Image 1 (cartoon, rainbow, N blue to C red):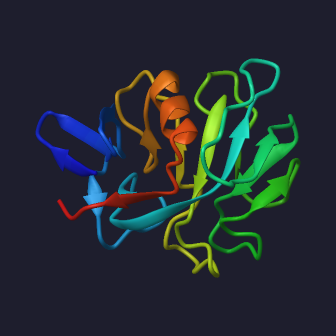
Image 2 (spheres, rainbow, N blue to C red):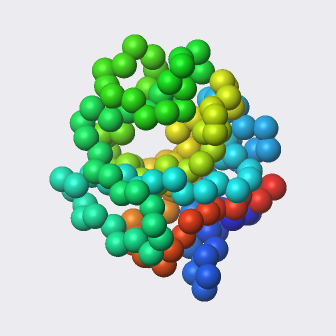
Length: 164
């Protein structure tokens, strides 16, 4: 994937899919809160979905699939020992709420960024999820639900974000 003046494209096999990235652009030196999408190879770790809103995705790769619960969160507090990890809400540190009123995480893929092990401040909660109304993300990658389902069914396992 490479950002261009007119947006981004995610390429997989014979598919070219329009994508949104962070409002901070693409960055080699990703930092917490910069709203940038990290450059590098981002493996897909697991798939999450809102079972009360969408059907379980069909998978072409052996990734764990889990329904999201109202108490699911993702810690984005660099000072927490749970930084860049899934947590149960309520949680004492700052966390991204996974069960949202908007449809952003109705189908969501956890991407492997700063997770083996997490390094404080290098960025957290980098997901492949559904588009926002703003046309950008806070550092994630977003594609339309139909396209995301197609990518998962065809076996997408890694996204490579190229230098700007």
